[in-house]
Length: 300
Ligand code: JB8
Image: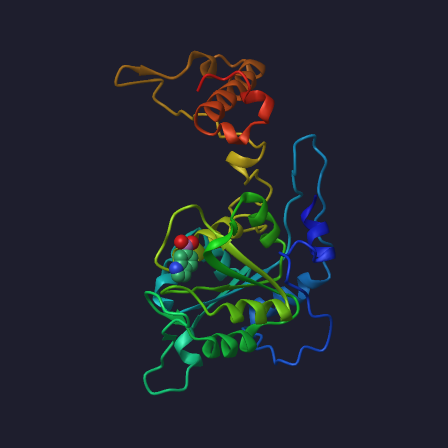
């Protein structure tokens, strides 16, 4: 399963979501910030990347193209860190274009209300659908992918990050309180592909931190975001095993020595040692990543 297939078929979105073929009734507000848009246009005709069959599972070709990211949130200041991170440089160079939009700008009442009490009762407040509808209408197009961080969503994985990195336009809808009125998700899914995605099995106070994590995971897969565009950016999950331990100078530190094999200059032995370390570490802390038969006789 390659990311190219995902993009071509648009079939990877969860059930209930769909792509609008043509004639979107909504006026997309392309943020035509000259330079980034020019880069985007130049990249439009670029062939999509293909999967390279390297024998490893799901080893993708280097990514190409520009990814545009819109973030809708009631805490726009949360995303200021994107300016100072690794991704900040990519933004400056127009490889990534990130726009943060304040949900309250899509309200019309004096108090810029974004929440209301839940139908059916219960604790907390729910985000009203109207501002979300207006926000989506201002930025969504049939080629957009809308992502709602949600504790009730599908797990975010490296393969989902790879897939998102191939999309032209990602919209992150960051909920707060008890979440967003579910009709907003249904509406978005009637316009384009929609994903409700969970960072993991724990509960956050809102979608912002989850969106930030996903943006970092996706951003580093976009060609040119990292210093070396052809480097193996996948690291820990490139072969489905956890990473081997790393060491640097000095060779002895506080009585602890670097494993001798790493100083041997024997590259075959080093490669074998690293794989062995990966397997041992994975069996110890993440046996779920190994095929079932690998765990059949493991004691713990
Ligand atoms: C309100 O735990 B989470 C998460 C929690 C949330 C919202 C989004 C994500 C919105 N609470 O991943």
